[in-house]
Image (tube, rainbow, N blue to C red; front, side, top):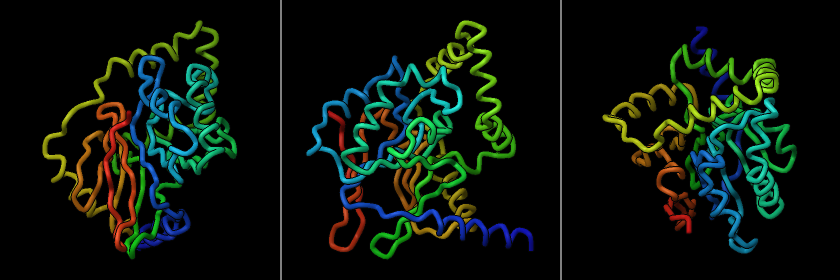
Length: 254
């Protein structure tokens, strides 16, 4: 009975997290912006107001290291933060927090709609289908759940910031070096088969017809869509409503 009650609660929460997906919306995932990876900034900063989409969905890990309650992680990203605020004055910007960028409401305020992990997936009803959008760091196991709760804790983030101050920037610097050493572009063997099993579990928790996420950097579609990682492909997705159906067009950033 407790499992059934949990499933019902999850479905009610997903219904409360509904939103309207706009025709022509852009979906950008996993750009991992940092001073050593500025491709997304270079692309977005060149766009004129007329070239912006009606809606920009940032699907998480847009920044490589941005913790809203660790002030020392914000300043290195200030240029990109300010650009997103500027874009948000021209079109709707919805930011699904990832595992590299979270606690964003204090950073963006009301300019950008930031959606924490607890508020995901967002659900849109399009052409008679329920579309679920999530960063993707879900069903990762008990260890990950403990880890992700810890790193999102305000006290932990502020303590990290304090340690960073007294150590001359060594904490943020070490995290940055760790992230920079990782290779974001890779293929996961048997990914589609693994995702099929994962979808079976997700469908018991949430009411949706199509699940869209980033996080895994695979750019694979079937009855599931893992978005291209901008950090790897330098591409983004445009949602199109055509003849009563929803289609996705992959475009290269130029």
